[in-house]
Length: 207
Image (cartoon, rainbow, N blue to C red; front, side, top):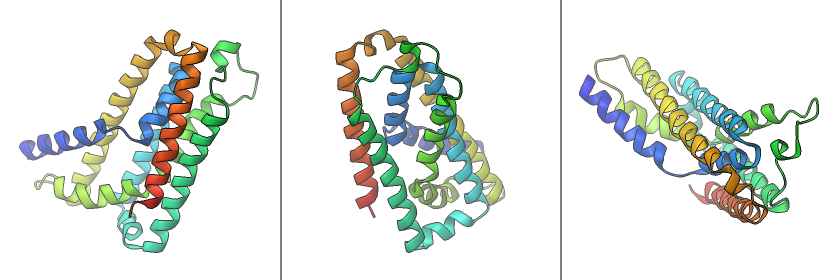
C-alpha cells in the first residue's frame, strides 16, 4: 500500500504546484493586506478543498460531475466570481492595504473577507469535483476501502496545498517592502486582475 500512496502523493504534489486561480488570489491578498490575510486566504482555500472532499467521499460530487446543467451553473458562477475579483483589482490598482493605512476600523471584517474569498473561489470550482471523482479513485491505495482511501488522499492534497501556498505567502511577505512601492503595486494589481479575468474566462469556456 505504501508505494501506491507515495505515488499518489507525488501526483497530487505536482498538480498542487501548477499555478492557478488560487495562487493569483493569494498573491493579490498577501501583497495588498499582508501575511495574516494571505494565510487566512489559504485557510479558506483549504476549507473549500475540504468541502469538496467531504462531498466527494459522500458520493454527491459524482452526481454534480454527471449533471451537465448543474455543472454548468456552478462553473459559470465560479467564472463570474473570478472575473469579479479581477475587475475589482483593475479598478483600484495600487490601493493602500489596511496595514499601510493603519489599524482597520472596528467591524472592517478584512480577516473574514480574506477567508471567504479563498473559500468561495474553491467552493464555486466544479473542476475540483471532477478532479476528485475522476482521479482520486484511481489513485486510492488498493488496501483500503474506497471511501477511506479517497478521504486520505483529500487530506494529503489539502495538506500539500496549505503547505505550498503558506510557503508562498511567507516568501511574498518577506518581499512586501518591494511590493509596497506604488508603481510595483499598481503593476502587480493590474497583472493579477488580468490573470484572474483570464482564469475566469478559461473556466467559463472550458468544457
